[in-house]
Image 1 (cartoon, rainbow, N blue to C red):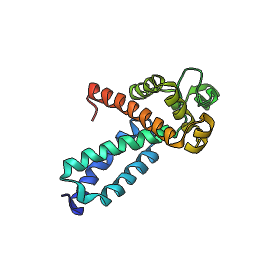
Image 2: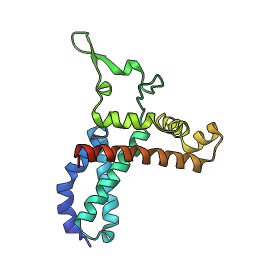
Image 3: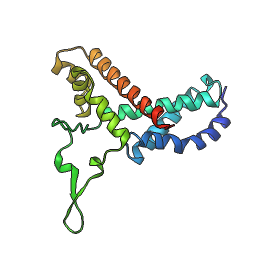
Length: 178
């Protein structure tokens, strides 16, 4: 069992690693830190369930990954197939010389490309549910619009995120990312 003192020491070491992990999904610094802080609070509440620090570390990495994917599901998706939820106007801005420059949203990291590809390969219904979540719709509104049960909406979202996570894990294993 991990004690609170051991947790504090381990968490100081882990915090930066977990924030970088969350940011690797394309989240900003503040959102990534919020996710990691929420995971810390949850970890403290579950402290007695961890066998050792390795178990805690693995659990925290997994939860941060899931929370980051959940956060992405709630953000506008840029799918690049004509059904973009981010407008083209958002992708450019003017610098001091009034020249158009690319926005960071338009810069695609290899991990973001893996996520985009995974989203594009989802079954139509799962993708539609994710797109609606990313537009800010609730499960109830999505269910009503699609004539399905809210529990089905949540299941479709969960299945879609599981597929995306599997693709991310596969990419991380291939790339040696921790």
